[in-house]
Length: 181
Image 1 (cartoon, rainbow, N blue to C red):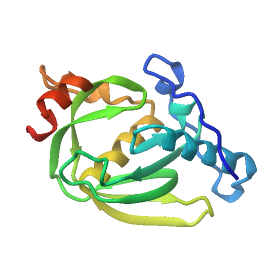
Image 2 (spheres, helix red, strand yellow; image 1 turned 180 degrees about the vertical axis):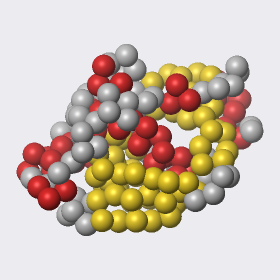
Image 3 (cartoon, one colour; image 1 turned 90 degrees about the vertical axis):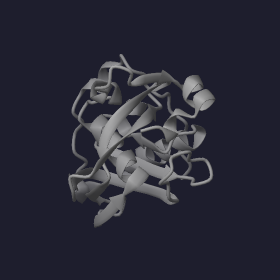
Image 4 (cartoon, rainbow, N blue to C red; image 1 turned 30 degrees about the vertical axis):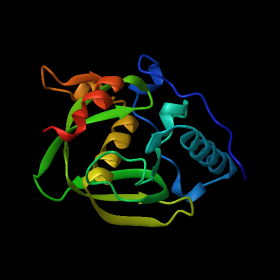
């Protein structure tokens, strides 16, 4: 099954502000599997490292994470194969946090400094309905927290606290702002 590329919803679209509905893990049907394939295809079409279903107009608790270490400019990136997460939840494993610029497919030109936990435990179901629990760190932990926020109607812009916490995509690249703390 090959998915289709869906339109990315941008900040201001009402779907980005709602808490998404759980996926019925006991009934992962063709509709859900097609939506997963569409989300994978949509993510592959972008330069993002994750996508949450509401970003493509789907009101379900589905996240796809996929990190190509070669394309990732964060210092603590690791390769993450395409990972489907249904009904993901996470909890912090320590109080350690860091603040870094984040980008978002739904906010194409703005980046913002967001504080995130550096070590988390994520619990989710895969597309076969199997429960997965694993510890993740660094950029992968940041990526998962960011995507899970979308499932609760939160866009990273709401989490920027620093008065100088925003930059355009172009300025981050020009001044290499990701390296600053």
